[in-house]
Image 1 (spheres, rainbow, N blue to C red):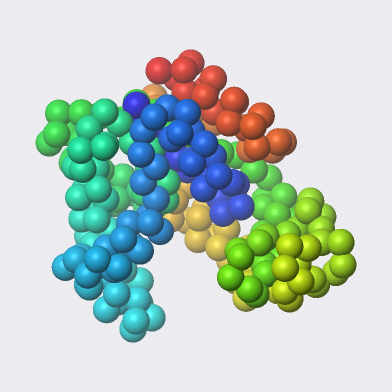
Image 2: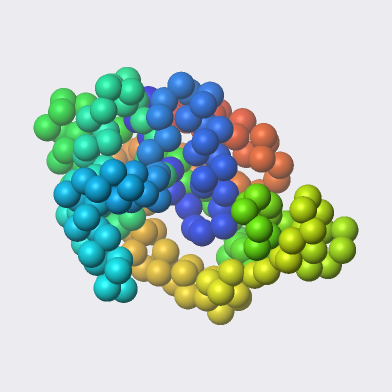
Length: 217
């Protein structure tokens, strides 16, 4: 299967992408991983992306598209893939369609994870991270530490990321509505979209997603 996963920040796309890719035995291709891999390996596209990032500028679509194309051409993606964070806007969606048409293949489905805006804010603004290297994550409501501000695992200090504050989250949501949401309508016109609620337990959302993809297929 060749799937695009969309949804607002805080919808749990990364978690669901990992679980769905594993269940469907296809690679999970995320924009973040593409950037890290290309920059880490010093590829021409990675070096170009890094130059923009170091200057505090947005990486142009053509660079992101180039990385995604290279990754989709890898042998492990021959029988399918799950795209997470790409396409991010209408231009990228159209470029993806053109690329797939050149390869003689097409998307099987677009999974839209739906979460109320207030829940997105609650999920992200309540997140607390450990300053130590363990990567432990807590939440003031859903997974609070035993002692406020202290990591249960290692005793490290918990902190809130600067872009996890409520006002920053609402700004990120505005960007999502403006730039990314239009691709949902674009794919609806192709009869590819399956929309599911991303509320509830992780495994419940995963099962919902699998059923939706089966019905859409």
